[in-house]
Image 1 (cartoon, each protein chain N blue to C red):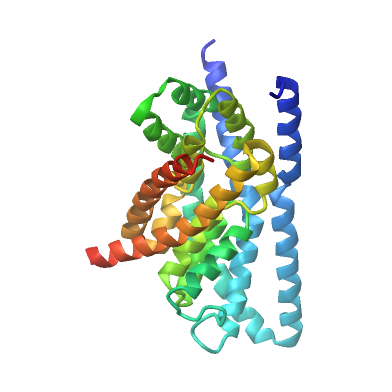
Image 2 (image 1 turned 120 degrees about the vertical axis):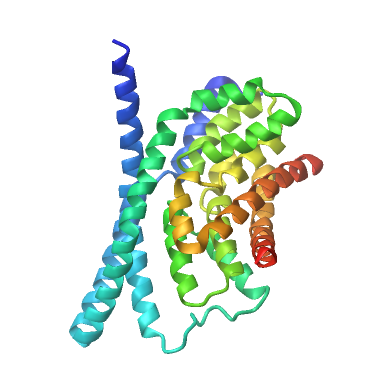
Amino acid sequence: MKEQPKTQKLKKAIFSSMKSIIGATPMILGIIMLISLISLSLSNDKISLFLNHNWYDPILSATFGSLMAGNPVTSYVIGGELLKLNVTMVAIISFLVAWVSVGFIQLPAEMNLLGKKFALLRNLISFVFSICVAFVSVFVVNLLG
Amino acid sequence: MKSKNNLKNTNQEGIKNTKKNPFIGGFIFLTIVCIIYCIVYFNNKPFFYEILNKSKGVFIQIVPILIFVFVIMATINYFITTKKLVKIFEKSRGVHKWIYSIVAGIISTGPMYLWYPLLSELKEHGMRNGYIATFLYARSIKPALFPIMIFYFGISYTIVISASLIVFSYLQGKLIDLLKV
């Protein structure tokens, strides 16, 4: 008799995970197709939006990450493909961290439920921290060799 | 002070404001990209096949990792429930509360907005904003996605980024408390 709730729990866990992965698949597929198109269309080895600038690139990518929402798998795919296009690691990490920590689209709900001041400040700090995390991570990895 | 019913209504309104089907958005995006591919096909067939092969190659590389991600996600979803997380929060005190906020953030799953109503209720019961901020920032660490992160960025970056996120999630909580938000 004890097996039934466990089976149900397992089914629920599998269903929830499957929903998450299947839900993200069209976006992942679209991103891969679009990046393949862009990377083969560009004659130079870098996406022209990124300038390989110490501050401009991470701020730009953190802004993109903050504006976008969805399954984080998608952000890793984008980040990984951008890396192949020689975009700097600092810019990529800023993008990845901002994607999951800053919720610009979810901001109205966050303000409504957790307070306006808290939501605005938390998102602002998260945005700044996404760039800090990127610099610290790259610095530490370089230091470790 | 808000009554329980008011809080529930506010929560539902808040969720309604942001909740949308991510599959539909992704599907629309994919359709647009497919249309662009059709245009490329009619203008430059060799280039079309080149980009199609590149996309196919990348996707085939990712599929086994996505399967692995699915297995880890299902395992986490099976063992970790919202009830368990709330219990952990309520029982912990002092330094442990910071640690549990980080751990709870790391192992929590699902979109961020789904956690707002629960956090709002915990706040009503006296939970400090610092812990909430720490919890939300620690959600940036996704153990289920480590395989895909390692695949793209390597194990060193995966470890260092995760460690940095733990430190910064604590710093964010402390900062929020310090600013008395």
